[in-house]
Length: 497
Image 1 (cartoon, rainbow, N blue to C red):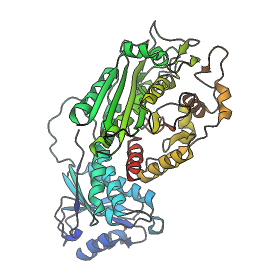
Image 2 (image 1 turned 180 degrees about the horizontal axis):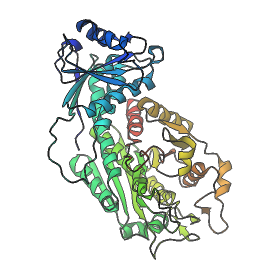
Image 3 (image 1 turned 90 degrees about the vertical axis):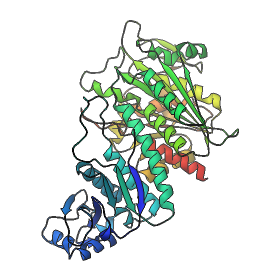
Image 4 (image 1 turned 90 degrees about the horizontal axis):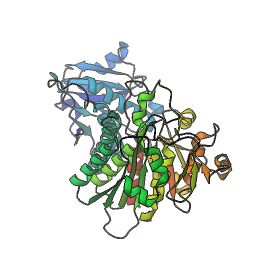
């Protein structure tokens, strides 16, 4: 999949030749420099638009103008920016997303955005350019893989976008935007594909494609027999009810080229989650194809890091499994023995993500990683707690928490820290095994994190619960590609240090 083509321009917007020029106006007839130039050159067209009530400058609004006198652009997309006194990073993010949404609906192959020239407190040109580019690409994405092939569209679709900027940092920002956009698109496509296509073998095949097309990347795929020899009884217990064999995908990038300890990304790859014998309700079960959002996210982040040739060592581990209820499926009350040696009482087969992750986290430690970060669509409880806006972050490492939260804020792929206190561990006590796989209805997201913490003792580790952020709700909801931006920013920041 190809992303939009991004470029930097510095020519005056009013004289720029382009199918669509994007400018922003604030409420109260407050114009930025670019809008002022357009208004002056067009004989006050933007001012008249505001005075007539056709444009308010309200955030989340936009209007298209055609054939403005004195303006070279074929059309001008005017985006509302909201109150100028409250125009911050969040408001800018909303503005560039509105621009992306509107551009997708227009019959243009390219556009020139001046929104990157707006002043945003505490943000530089590089941030503004990268944020605008990622927003445009996110809205330009179209899922077409399983539709009947169609004739080429009669009207153009957005393929390229230029941004008004002059600083030297803008070029690097576009390189980062292109790589992150590629990772996000990869993750979204993998998440959107149906489970009869995107099964564990397909996930492994996509990882193979990454390895084959990028120098310096190596791949190992562990089969059922390999995992059995390693003692991954927890992961294999979840897999035993499906006719699709499990895969443990291990990608490595040696960007530092020495013996430096790698950063490890681990992603939950349940390619379809029926709930197993603890069967989910039928309504909404079709959304459980997205239960491999963590796997898609870490694979997308790995791809972006490799595209950027980040100077660090990176390992990406994906346990890819299908959770199905056949006659061989694991049962509530089964006792599974994990790779770590800890035994697990299964109280609910629909709490399967932690059962595959615990073995993957144990396996990750063989690389002696600097840090382990796992991402998983783990609990509905996290959605109840945080909704669709923030991923849940759990770690006992305060420095790691601050780094991940900062990366999320920088990319607007935000997370919120939840406690991981030992006080909650008592909810996981079992009378028949070392630990139970659920801790009751209270603090469900936290006890899931506490379960994983038992398999990461002595390691710098963080858990991202992305159950609320990995996809949009509803029958037509698409995968979002989160937490690719957060993870890539975290890795970029580590290289900067």
